[in-house]
Image: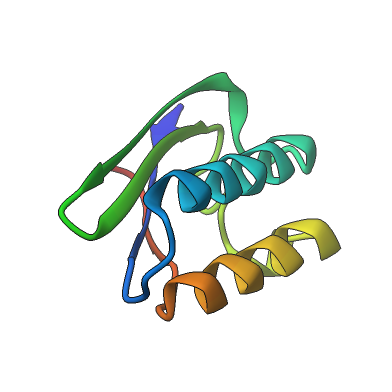
Length: 92
């Protein structure tokens, strides 16, 4: 099993509670698509950065080629709300 890091900078005036809710929806879409495992992952905000640390079975489980429609749609929504791109670090 691997721990991955999904992060993005919050470069907008969006309420941080709202973006945490939207990020939770993204995590549920990853889980529903089989890309992350279980419902146990760490999510936190430090400064203006939102970070999630989900567990995956494979090192490349979060590769965009595997994303389904729902993961892609929610990723785009979050990126637009935060005015930044999602970054993924594999195999922490």
